[in-house]
Length: 318
Image (cartoon, rainbow, N blue to C red; front, side, top):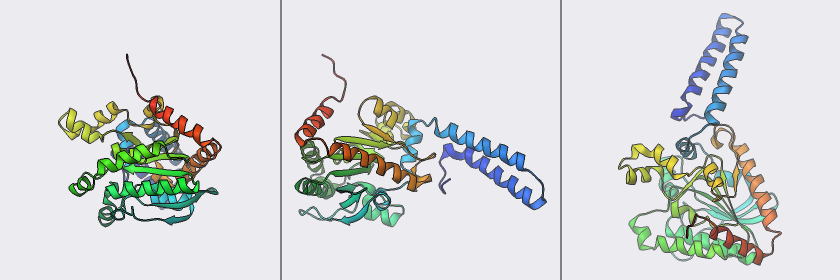
């Protein structure tokens, strides 16, 4: 169990404390409590399976935001080799909230980019809390074109509450930067795989989310608005975030059922933060499989399929 406990995990923590007390009592008093300890371990396992096997949409949102959850650069370190970061958009500057560069995934040379959050105040300020500026999206586009030029597949890891909405970002045309990325990714002549590893918030996620294969980690979320934002608009109060999360259908099972994502990558029990290495292995395996499949498809056929994939989304009535 991680150091940070979410509200719905408290029953597990309480049982684990009781187990610790039983073991200590057994050692201190030299009493054989092996039977009671075994029963308690089974109870903990059953409770853990029951909680994590029946997560609500809001609980998945909480896990997706867990401070100990692996971020983009953690996955690069664990799942990639030969990573070389490339900085700057060649127009304004570099955006630390959107790092990217060249990397190798299981022998496949590719261009990889993603949103990066921080784990403390200093790093969050440096990474802008994972909310990219316009130059972040323009850097992403520069790297996409680099991938296209050299015939490398492009991999994007999405983890943002949304693009930065500040005055400076508006002055430098954040909406235009995202729109251009969406347009150009649709016709990028190289395979694209995007994975939502945590938060997939609105246009900030879509700016690197147009892909031949869109995947999600099991406890990530992908939505047009945050549950809190939706609750503030519809219920006039953020306390209704759990209701909003359920109504938004933002979790991986719902999005799979609607055909908005192409696959769900399993996480270790309790979330990716409970076993980052296992989560990275699962992500690496899924991305590698998708890249190997996509790289065999003729590029014109790939582009046609990409176009049809997004045109088919939604429900229409005539």
